[in-house]
Length: 147
Image 1 (cartoon, one colour):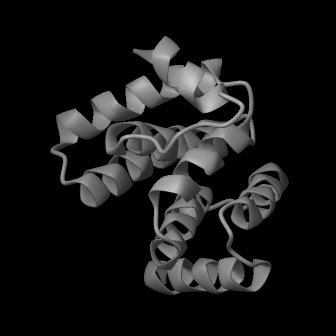
Image 2 (image 1 turned 30 degrees about the horizontal axis):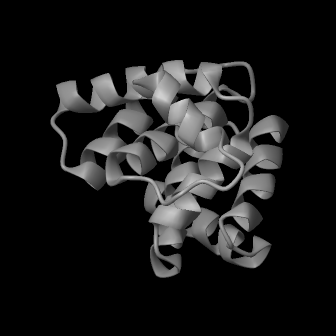
Image 3 (image 1 turned 120 degrees about the vertical axis):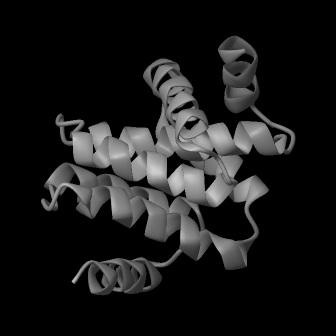
């Protein structure tokens, strides 16, 4: 399963991915972001599970399984660009702000904004076609919901 998905992610000119592959790519990107500071905190894992359960209509067990599969994919994937390319192809522009909000939710889940997580998110946002300003607005929306 992962071998085929990795081949599609690393193809020089990939075709649009099926929804299940794009779902896996987004979940793997959430995992990569959470791990980027070297501390894959329980709060971040719980937040990822909640995000994907809500986004994809999964029960807690299904969400945890998707996350566990995405953890394996994230470990084996060569770079972040592959994930963003798959997401950008599968998610309409008007819905990508929601992707950035989900990424900010993971960054802020443990209550600490680490430089590594910030740097990765600053790199990922433009790859998804989202400006720094729109990413900052998404972060503010998440911070406002948390307070």
